[in-house]
Amino acid sequence: MAGLDITPVAGTGRQVIQSYGDDCFRISQILHQGAVIVLAEQVMAWEVPGEVDGIDAVSIDALAPVISRATEIDILLIGCGARFGPPPKGLRAALKEAGLVLEWMDTGAACRTFNVLVSEERRVAAALLPVA
Image (tube, rainbow, N blue to C red; front, side):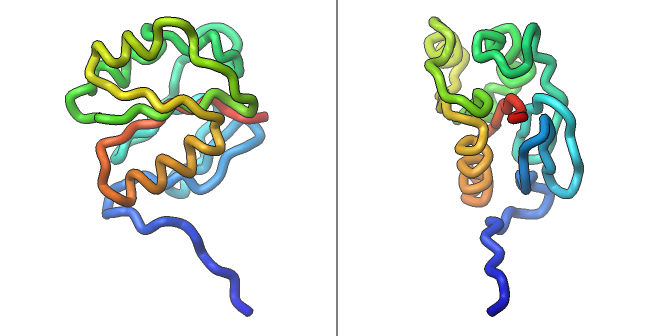
């Protein structure tokens, strides 16, 4: 029996997160080291201050590259690494004020959710902390 490819079909130019782990991500055939911000049509390194795998490093200031594009995005997925914990206080309210809905989850769930939403042509971005 042949293997079943479950990678969602994304439109031309859309990013697809293919894998994650070992402090990197494979997105649309390109390997990215460390934290990343993934938009439907672009991937960029995410400069998170402090310890990269620390949830507390995720702040409104660290999310400035996403907030600057808030008119292009409805949903912001934040992958908080391998372990799940609550978002930093005030982050959800600050993002809502910027016009973004926050969906906070572990990095694996955020990668899978991004792929589904981008394949549905939703206006989504993902800020992903790496998983060791």
